[in-house]
Image (cartoon, rainbow, N blue to C red; front, side, top):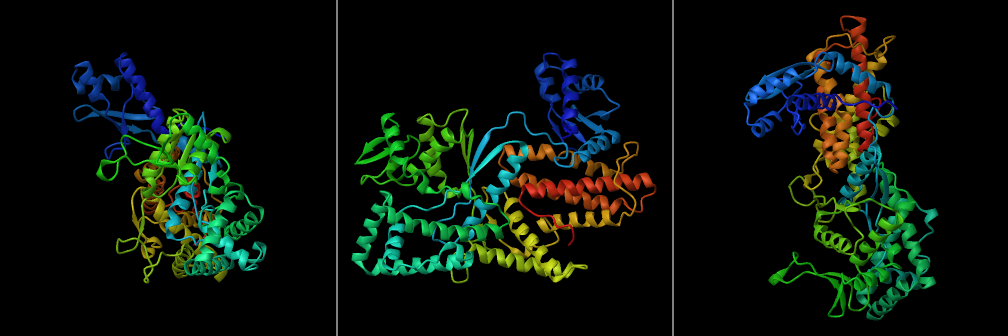
Length: 584
């Protein structure tokens, strides 16, 4: 692997050295930003001048005199009240990009020196229930976060905390006891049939439960048998879980996501540990008994009439709820998985619950300054009318239906633009484009914001869409195929066009962007970077002939820029979980 220091970091170091040489007592941390007038603008001089009680322009002039130029930095000029406009040399841009190009796998981006272990809790469907549009964001955002974190060197462990425990299973299992054979063996069904079986059993059991008081009582007793580990009850419960997994895997496959069986660890996995969690919290005084229940109170969390809102660890009847399973999961992830970070990709409406759970875990000493937890609360998927996404009948939209429609719309776009693609190839590309469109629309929005689900916009070739990025990548591949004998090769001696410089500087910022997006759990920042990359490439393509450039060296250098752009798009999109077809 070739480790490449970004030009931004190199310029930052040169400035820090110059500031220290000018004012040894200075806190040498100049602030850099991109500027329309130059490649970078440094604006840390003003604060330093104020501290030193000197004229900012005079101090800036002194700093310029101590900046080493000629290799990385071509020119520095003082502007305004004391800003520094910095221009990087063409040679430095091309040489840095050449080093990145030589690293086929990581584009010169080194992993961080001290990686940790992050457990990502995401994609949390419920057993015996269909996945709907509300499950989309958790799956897509969580998968992208794992991609980015893994790339930075972090070890990620996925946890799909599926709803596989609770009172509804008493109803379902009791119905199966009384109507054996209703569920076919999981190995004999596909995802669609598995969901059909589950729906049929759920509706039938619900009808009996609502109409028959005696059955309702038997179902309640079955819950007790389940929680106490009755063998026959657990065997039927396992049937529901296995059937549901067949269905889950079929949906995740459509989403082009890998979900490993060992990472599906539902609420049931923590059942045996919940009594110990309750005991520990009570012994430590973190939780107290109140009206028969074991609860945790918080001074800053109050409800109606300014009364404290407790976190219920154990109900008065001895049962356990979400708080107990979530706290037990934290113990498992910290002490058994040795996690340094717990990341939850959960609906923002559960933020209060997790705020109380995390604070309880901190009081217990399970979360510390070295082991942290974050709730990546995400917003709602809205329809075109700005209201929560529903069918015309007012029902929640099935996730499978949504994905199928996206692929169908994408097929229309691909077929319209297709050149020399067979129908099978069109359908393959349509799946990649359609699913990519759904993911990108989600990921290009800040996670905590709601967004409108508009398929017409998502599959558009224009604007901030994954299709625009995918076509940019496919266009580059077409150019590289047409290059004939010319091969991509860097020529640092060449003077760069303004569009080449802009593209090159942006390419060099890929690693910095990924690390920033991963550190802030902000996939939308990587999506924004990739969109700008595609836009800068379009500008370069319009202004700088590639195969018809003036000299063979210029052809090779521009093919080199094309190739590095394609590889950066491919890598960046892959981190977000989106495919980049070679032909469109």
